[in-house]
Image (cartoon, rainbow, N blue to C red; front, side):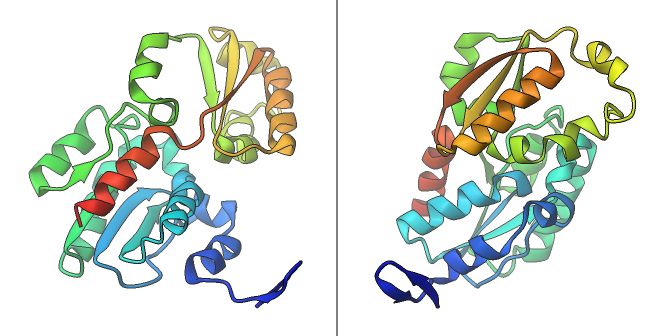
Length: 230
């Protein structure tokens, strides 16, 4: 139970899960399925909060979520073998499994795996594309933009600044980001605090700053499709 303006409110399972998980957990360990629906989504931990929000908003109690560690964003060669292991682990327990990863730096390996195993995956080269909308993103042809989502704004230091050694060697900044011109913050929710952090990230990187509210974009479209194909 939690207290609200209207008194005590009983939280549903998805709300309790949403409140309990941390970005560190999603980054390092991912998320195990917490219930037993008919459909399993296997996703990147960086998408967990957005997926849970869409599941809750639509009342999709038949859908479970398994997330792999978001830090695989930095080691995409781990994604395909880990997705294979996860499909093999759960395929007998669910009537359908869907992969909520774009290509994400796997060089087509993830799509080949999905074709081999007969599972469907979300379309697009990466999450920046499907948040923007794949068609719109492709038309922009923004080869000098560096993109952040809500999750990556919150985890900027853990995913970029410290692994690149910029906390210890700021003089390396131009070597890493010299070919970029603009940091584009693709916001899934409207949060002034995250906007402020994203703008500071752009300043630290020496880039121009652009804010775009994308919402969930093609992610929500794909999830709706997966939910009806149960």
